[in-house]
Image (tube, rainbow over all chains, first blue to last red; front, side, top):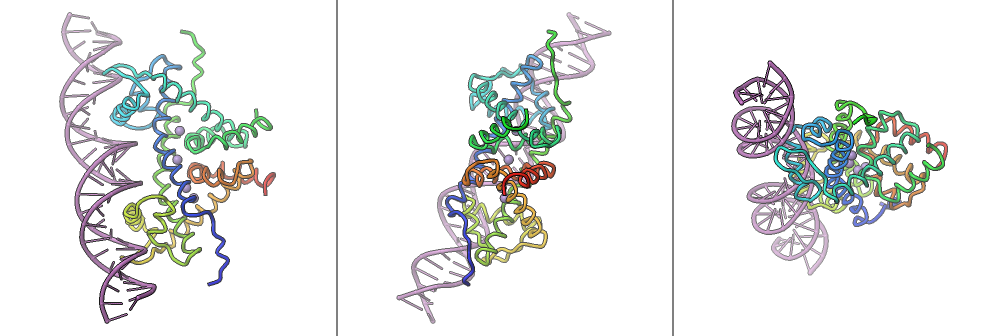
Length: 146
Length: 146
DNA sequence: CATATAACTTAGCCTATGCTAAACTTTGGA
DNA sequence: TCCAAAGTTTAGCATAGGCTAAGTTATATG
Ligand SMILES: [Mn+2]
Ligand SMILES: [Mn+2]
Ligand SMILES: [Mn+2]
Ligand SMILES: [Mn+2]
C-alpha cells in the first residue's frame, strides 16, 4: 500500500509526551495539597485535616495518609492531633503553584469563559502547562485581559 | 483579627473542581488508548500491543492489563495473540478525543508556543478542557491562527 | 472539672497503574 | 518444514490514592 503514511514524530519522541503527563500527575497531588494548606493558613491561621478533606471532597483518612507521604517528602510537618505546617520547601512549592494556578485561571477568563468554568478547568490544566506555554499565556494576558 | 478574609467559594463548590479533576483522570487512560489504537489502525492497518507500549513508553504487560479493562468497558475487542479492534463506542470515543486533542494543540500553536511544546502540553491539557473552554479556544482560533 | 462531641488516627480493604521475569503463540526464513 | 525471533500473555510484586469502620485524643461547655 503506497499510502502517503504521513507519519508523525518517532515513537521515542511520542512517548515523551506521555511520560511528561505521568510525571505531572505524580506531582499533582502534592502540589494541590501544599497550595491548599497555604491557603488555609493564610485564611484562617491554621490548616487542619478536616478542612482539607472538605475542600478536596475526599475522606479524612485519605488526607491523613497523603499527609504522611508529604511529610516523608519534607513538604509538611505535623505533630499528632495538631495542625499542619509547611516546610520552607513546602512554602516554595505552594507559592509557585499559586502563581501558576492564578495565571492559568486569569488566562481562561481572558479567553472568555465563565468564572465557574475558569475555576474548575484551571484546577486540572495548571499541572500540564509547561513554562513555555505559561509564558505564552502571560503574553496573551498582557495584550488582552487584565 | 479583623482581616478582610476575602473568602472564595464554599467548600462544597470548591470540592467540585477536584472531583472533576479526579473524574477526568479516571477517563484519561481509556481516552488515550482508544485514540492511539485508532491512529495505529489508520496508519498501519492494525494495532498491536507492542506499538501501544512503545508509543506510551510503558511495559508490554501494562498494556495487556489495561486492554483487559477496556474490553470490559466494551471499548475494544481482541482475540488472544491477535490485533486489537475498536468497538463502535471505542471509535466514537477515539474520534471525539481526536477532535478535542487536535483543537487544543492547534490552539496552543496559535497562542505562539513551539510545535514540540504544543504536542507535549496538549497531551495532558486535553483531558481537563470543558466544552465551554473548548468553544472559547475554537473562537480564538477562528479569529487568530489558522 | 467532667464529659460529650469534634477531630484525628489506625486498620483493613479495594482498584488503577506501573514493573520484571517467565511462559506461551505466531510467523518468517533457512 | 521447522525453529528462532518477535510478539503476547500470565504471574507476582509494588505504590498511589481512594474508601469505611473503629479506636484515640483534644476541647468546649454545662
Ligand atoms: Mn490542581
Ligand atoms: Mn491531568
Ligand atoms: Mn489525546
Ligand atoms: Mn492525552
